[in-house]
Image (cartoon, rainbow, N blue to C red):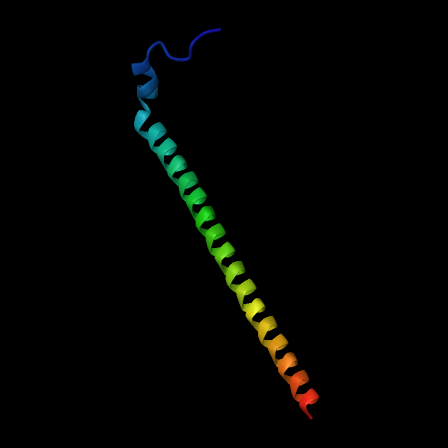
Length: 78
């Protein structure tokens, strides 16, 4: 098995195309990190929205139960 590069310097020089190769690597890594960050941000936003909706539904349910209880107590009073 032969090594592709004879030294670390040759590896980083990439046969004279280092600028293009490392620029492509940097753009790829930045894009992937951006994608991961955006996904995590979206997940947090989605979980917050779900929490808000559940809290709203709980408040609505509680208000409806309170209305039913007060209507029932008024009927008993009559």
